[in-house]
Amino acid sequence: MAELKVLISRQDIATRVSELGAQITKDFAGQSIIFVGVLKGAAIFLSDLARQVALDCTFDFIGVSSYGNRPSPTQELKSGWDSTGEVKLTKDVDQSMKDKNVIVVEDILDTGLTLTVLKKLLLAHQPRTLKIAALLDKPSRRKLPLEGDYVGFKIPDEFVVGYGLDYAEKYRNLADICVVPRE
Ligand code: 5GP
Image (cartoon, rainbow, N blue to C red; front, side):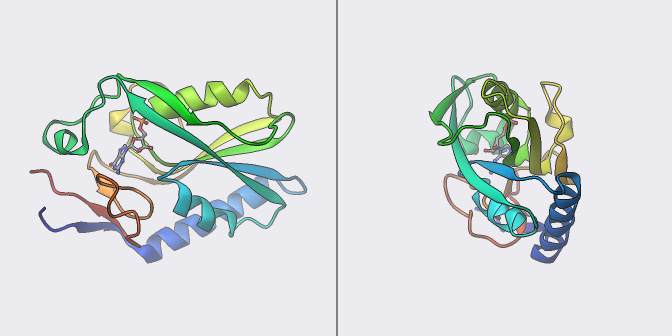
């Protein structure tokens, strides 16, 4: 594979995550939060974000996989993928969300399909509030009208890895967010 190029440095990520944490702390002052991380990509973002929030909080995780016609990452790099497939739940939350402040933590908001499905699913648990925190956002790829409440960075239509994001399960442990060059 061609060399990865840094798009967002670890220092810039840390600064922005700390700003998001401060904003959440302010918005939910005096209340508690359940962070629901979307496996696996959001694991690193969730652990950094939660440590920047000075409130009582608990963690939960939800697992999804896309099936239908979402192609492999290799195809994505050549032609761009289309999330027209359905989203399948592979792991549900473990605790009750009823009357709680829930923040869904996602690595990247792309077409909006995953979070639209998750939002609907979590709203069925009747939380007091439901917000979306997404480290990255590719607005030009959106197919469903959905916005994040706490967004780290808006990025162009590039395939990125690192800081939790993978390419065929690799590169999740990179400290910077990098662009995989198109072939
Ligand atoms: P959506 O349902 O919004 O189209 O897609 C969200 C999911 O697509 C993300 O959670 C992530 O798994 C995957 N995704 C979208 N864009 C990228 C990208 O640039 N890099 C990686 N590694 N995954 C991406």
